[in-house]
Length: 242
Image (tube, one colour):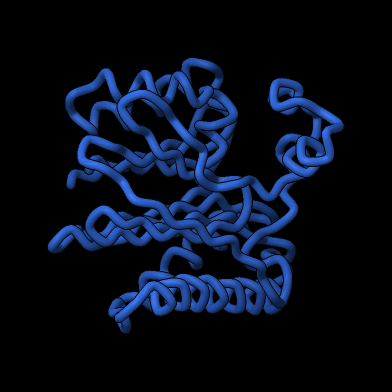
C-alpha cells in the first residue's frame, strides 16, 4: 500500500484554504483527511485546518475498533466534534463568522475502506478498467441533477456549481454520509477538493494516475493539469494505491 498527497494554492487565490493529512499506514491500516475551507476573513483556512487537527486529535486518542459499527462511530464522532469546534470558534470571532469546510475522511483497513463525507470534495475509486465517484456531492447542482432539471454535463458550467448544501462548522449540527467498499490489489483511490474535480474530468483523472508509475508523480501531475486549465481554486489531491 502506497500513499501520496499534494496541495497547491492554484493560480487565482491569495491563500490556500485547503488542508489535508495522510497517516502512516502501519500494517495496512491508516486514514486520510481532505478538507476545503470557505467563508469569513481567512476563515476558510482556519476551518479546514481546525477540522483536520480535530480529527487527528480524536484518532490519536482512539483508533481502535472491533467491528464495522465501531468504525462508523469513530468517523461520525470525529466529524461531529470538528463541527462543534469550528462552529464555536466562528461564534467567538466576528472575523471567522460563516466559516466552514468540506471534509472527506477515509479509514483504510487492509482492502476495506470506510468513508465519511460532508460537502463537495470527492473520493474516486479507480480500477483497471473504470473510475467511480464514490462520494456524492452535497451541492446545489447535485440536487438539480437529482431532480432531473440539469444534466451532469450542464452542471460543469452551471453558475451555482460552487454552492454547497452541507459543510462542517456552519451549523450547530452536521449531517454526514457514509460509504464503504473493498479495493483489490492494483486499485487506487483519489481524494480531492473541487479545485481538481472542477478542472479535470474523472476519465482524465483515471488516465493520469494509471499512466504514471510513481504515485507522487501522478498526484503532482493532477495538480499541474488543474493549474494548466486555469487553477481557479486551491487544489488538493491525496491518493492510495493498493
